[in-house]
Length: 224
Image (cartoon, rainbow, N blue to C red; front, side):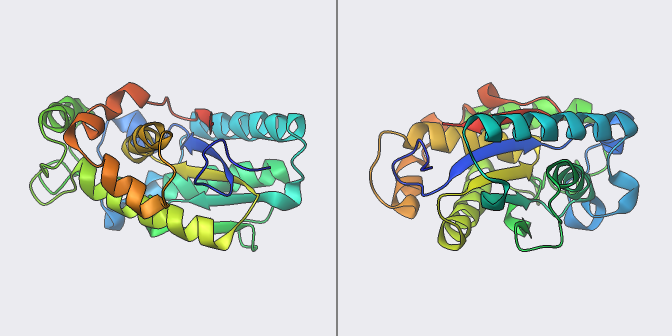
């Protein structure tokens, strides 16, 4: 079954990781070095959220007559996202180590820079306020919204080249998934190739509004 987007060959779902230990502690954990540590995987509530998301995904696949052999799970290598993907894969009876699953570094958390790393979640609004004014402005040492768009475009191009007519579940983080929804929503009116479309819509008026696509932990959404 083809995507609702004319320029995509697959149908996509997104899933924000379940509630994590950093979420419980109120910590920003955004670097690869810290994010891949086992101590920052899912909290027990997050495991439950991931299981429920897997069951909902399975239900939606069944309703759309998608066979499990056509499911692909692409996930961030951070411990909280790989843990989430593991739980979902177990619900679907798919091996995370098999060919249907793919860890992708380009799906990692947005890096907010050393001045925010391991600091309080209370600092997120400061970053988002800058995003709203100028989504090309980087937090010191970190990534701007536009930087995340570049690597998400790269990830989508890889997925689209590797798979066709599949149900692709993207397991990632709050900011990257907000940004992904923002660019795909703006891209619906275009019929060009993916890279050209992303270049055309990477403008402040589009990228500055990513917060309106925010997801809760463990929230599953189908992109149509």
